Length: 122
Image (tube, rainbow, N blue to C red; front, side):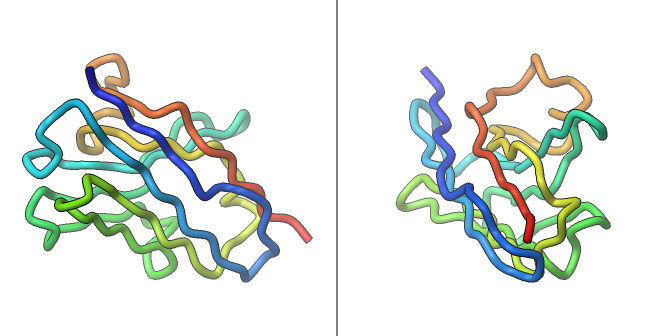
């Protein structure tokens, strides 16, 4: 079965950095778009970024563009999110998703990890 296990969350200061990783198993990882999304009590579910199977095509939400970088290693079945210049409003539960941005509109149609908490605070 599909398994997505996130790691790397934690506490960071404003302006700091964190790197999230997601280990995938149970499917042909290299053939699928992978995404990150985040959820907060106030804003709800927000798509953050996606990367296509060939590793060259990526997309970002305007709120993170220029600060976050998504990458993947098809040999290791991992997808990562490098988060720089963190802001308090980046505080959220971050999810790894097998699928693209449409997964945030139709979450039950996609596979999600359990989430990793990111807190940005001084």
